[in-house]
Length: 310
Image (cartoon, rainbow, N blue to C red; front, top):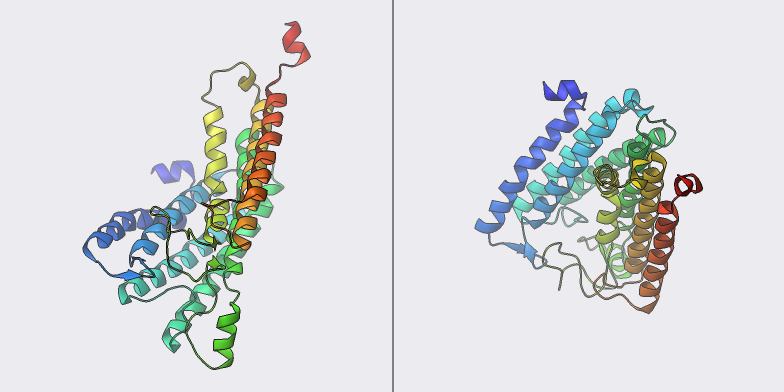
């Protein structure tokens, strides 16, 4: 009844509920199943994907409930996203149960078929999300602050999803293996080092080289971060933030900062640099980004002439 009152997308909400249920299931599996793959618990990837997909599904369901140009077209697109995401999760969970890689695995005909199916599912997911983002980008919103957050959040999210395609590029060693007829792995998320090895405890991100999962994850979840930031501004008791235009400007600045950080982590990863070991150019770029954003915030919060005279 609550879903009907809100008008949220039914298939996406059902998918979200399944992902929420998978979080404790895969978490428990990590405790009782001591198998590892590339040095990480075998159920760690399904756990991470369940959390990520749960956040993605519920936010997109909410976005499609808003009166935008995407609402009508978004119904079938949302269903496509729910179905293709389910297919991807079934493959990820199934391969984890088998003790095999779900991504980049072409070691057998069966594994190759699963990877191709996953790739096609991701293509449908990305295309559907991109269409929704474009429609939302040219929509007008009653709540301009929430609309601004959703517009930029979706666009950055599509950019984050696009990083996944970079992971499909085979390394020189893999190309040599392919030329020799050796099947195994095509692509990967690490840059400059093999997948696996030393990694961050909470995320599994590589700490010895670049890792494309960092910008992939960071960009994709702009869809949650920016609307949450916009909502938080509405709870701040401040005369300046009572102005909708000021809040919208702050959201735009937050979107610019988020997009800059996404680009920075992507640049860092492509240079084979671990997110935990930024070099001088990375730190300089970060400082410049923060400085520009800080100046923008100061300007946005500066009292207007009318406010000062009052």
